Length: 481
Image (cartoon, rainbow, N blue to C red):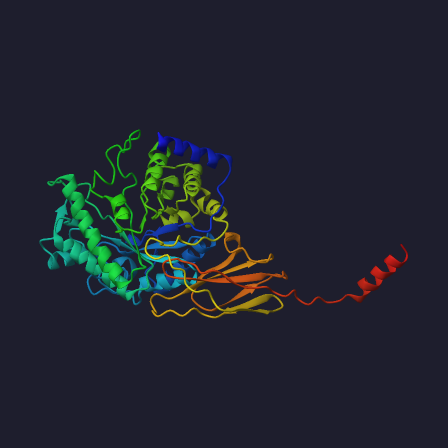
């Protein structure tokens, strides 16, 4: 009953008024590389770079703050790996280098725009049986790869599966400045004929997750561990999952992974609507254990060749999630940036102000030191801000900076409308002032997302040109009143 009441209360709030844009909220997209269906659409290195930059520019303009880029595709990669071959989406030929590191490019371009970049790792499926990646892995691990139909899968019940995936994720974490490792398909295939109990099956999958968690966190503890579970955790007392859920159907005990600290965030694939969406979203919220939940929304279903959903199916879900203090994640990037049924235009208005990813206070809640000084140099059209950096002992666990501006003093750093630059790596920024007298504040933010108290600068009003004609005329009018 509590769940039902909460759902109807949230729905009434959304219908009465659009939710206020918050300062902290996950706004993510899945950027799919398999077959180049989101990116890339060309085998030209130059065109691939240009296309990725266009996509990320669009996402930044909609205040998206997290990109989940598919880095392990099907036992193949978009980066030079010591363990697996290149995927063919970049060069057109599996196993052949495209001449550059696509994962590094995506990380660099996301960070330039203040966005987090997470390496999306497809775990258990390894592709069609005779594809390049699957054949290579079968040669290395013949007793681990299982054939179901035409597809190859890593056997969740073999300890080597967890060991291998942990080693792979360690390689990515060590070599790249990723903000997260995002596990996809970390579950039994739905076509698997389970010969163990559901409890044993859940234990096998959880053991894999635990091995990956230890490998990632031992390298860089601030790197977010996340996964994309089936959108319904399990049957609810009043709403059934219709045989398709994470916990029972595919042995994916994702809520326990949050509780036990194996996951920092979940991106449930909630590609549903109505009573198949809202009660289950409430369930994810109630068992979030203070971690990040950012349900996946089926923007692809808006397309006429898919389910031809009306736009308000997605926009209403976005509003409800915001009222619940949950994030939202779009599947997939192309359907968002193509503005399918106007969803991109709506998102730009809905995310009218920037947002920071919520801090991982369950791992570390100590805020960094604030910048010691903030200086402002006034120009004709721009202000140049510079501040003292905050020292950090680790080049990997570096400090970032957020900049706030307001015509009011002191600057309210809790108002997202005042955020003008987020997650800056450097110690300076140029701000167009448009003739306004702006006051500024800068904060330091660590890799866990903890933010310092602000360092402020109260700007002096710019010198005004004296118009003596206006001055004389003003005196004359006063004289003859």
